[in-house]
Length: 446
Image 1 (cartoon, rainbow, N blue to C red):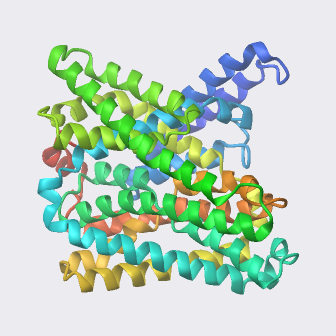
Image 2 (image 1 turned 120 degrees about the horizontal axis):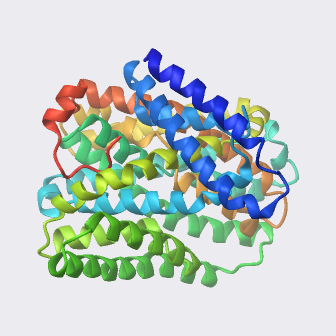
């Protein structure tokens, strides 16, 4: 661990020195700055993950913390322009993780768990959305942006925030399942639920946003919002079937250079799909599901082949997520944000507990499943970016509140999930055990 610390300090010093050679106002150096920031975040986050692993903490948390410290809010070794330039990396990482996750979801194998997953999704999403909405409404005296609104308008705005806070993080869950090599009823239940829950949150957010726009005087109408949601869901699913069929044909007819071809496809999906208002997460997830459950392709070898190729992108993805956190914003809303973190945690715990007991799940699922629904990233970071389209004015402060809460959950909750996977007996407890129990069909290596 001491060697890792020395390497991190050396890399940080070199990055500081290298940045002095990049003029701040020179556009022609943008590519050099992007390459520099990618390499720096990759190295420093990778070694930070080693330090956290030695402390029996998730490597993923190490990646995020490294990004926070290197980001503009702390040491400023990476600028916000550099982070924006790394946007394609985030898109590719989401597609890779979702594609592998879809390939993991064998519906025949998961059929005994579908009732539990359905119950978990309903109870957890409903409980967290309702409790967080009520908590935001109750915290109106301490939220300045709520003051101009009367009770019905404030409730509509609180509902938008509450639904945003119901979002989970398939990426974090998949990353930790890979790191711990966890497999079993608990792991499969958590993975299936977080994927289904995020799809439910997308639909619920669209409905809530339409109501809020009408209540607050927004310009978009309900029909337009409904058409947008329908296109995002069904259009993305249809595109995913097409991508899955393309990958299946390639694997059947060519079968060489699979990892590189998958990276190329994910880049196209993330860049082109977003411009067509498609959700890259749904596209890639559907493609993986199609290959695993419809085509006759064996996805185990494919997932194994892209693991090594996806490692650098996976590390940089979470480092960028940490670097993008606005600690200055978090400080301004620290009190209400902490209260909402507690409210969300309690509601997720209660919803998961009730769902597991009602579905007569195993004791491990009843006790630990809620930890998989606490981390936030991805969708929870994207929804606040839509607030300016929903609110006629003053979208910055509600977005700052949500991003602050997501930041807290992003840093702390993966630790709880790792503890749950270890104590449930589904996770390998050491590096040697992880290597011995490693199956090719894991989400991404860490």
